[in-house]
Every structure is written in C-alpha cells, then in structure tokens.
Image (tube, rainbow, N blue to C red):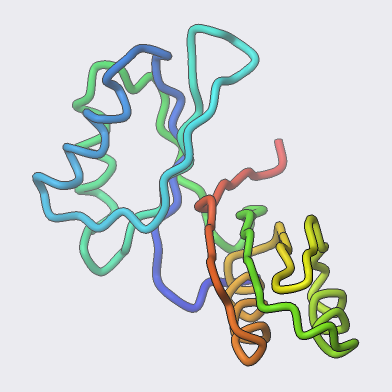
Length: 160
C-alpha cells in the first residue's frame, strides 16, 4: 500500500547509549525537518538499537536528511527505504463509546481490529496495520464516538 503523503523512510542502526534519541530528534528540530513518526527498540545485539524514522518529504530533501544523519557519531548505519517495497505497520489503540450495537463490532471486525477490553460504557480496540488502514479505521469508528486514541508510530522493514 502506498502513502497518501510524501515521506522519506529510514531505518537507522544506532549505538544503544543514552542521549542518542535526543541527538537525532534535536538534529531534525534544529533544521526544521518534520518527523512524522519515530520508533526505537533494541536489536538482537545489545550494543545497538533500531530506529524507524519517517520524515515529511516537503520539509526535508532526502539528501539533506541523509547528510545530517551521517554527521551523528552514534549513527552506525543508515538505510533509506523505498515506501513501495517496504512493509510498514503501526499499532493503534482506541477507546470507543460502547453502544452495544452489532454494527460497532462489525466495523471493528471488518477492519481487522480486535476488542482488547470491554465495559458497559466503552470498548478498547486495537489494530496493527499500515498507517493508511489505521486512518480508515479511525474514520470508521468516529461515528460511534472515540474517547481516546493512541498510535505507536510507523515501523518499516524490507525483505532481506
């Protein structure tokens, strides 16, 4: 699935040290580049973490982003990811008013969502999917009354 917005996707291998995330985010803030999504997690090698970084293409030309990232000492590897070949996913958790109607649960099911908690007044649902699918899921649930919403940010991977 392609993006509806122009983005640059990067996978960074960085040293697993304190302050690296702040340095990467600070670099973008100082240059006025808009970070759309940033997710960080350890890798199988405890010395490194993996950052999935999505940058607004209109705020930052690709070569400038790469050049700036290359200057950071703790960045070990930069991989530019082509959106059309990447598997992209994020997780969304939503609290929705529980009207106990079958249609609410039909919408959740139709989008591949799952109910993770339910009480008389609300339902907590989750969906892990491409960001565009998450957007569609949110739009489909809006008529029921979204109480709260949390998204993780995008992570990306390409086949080896």
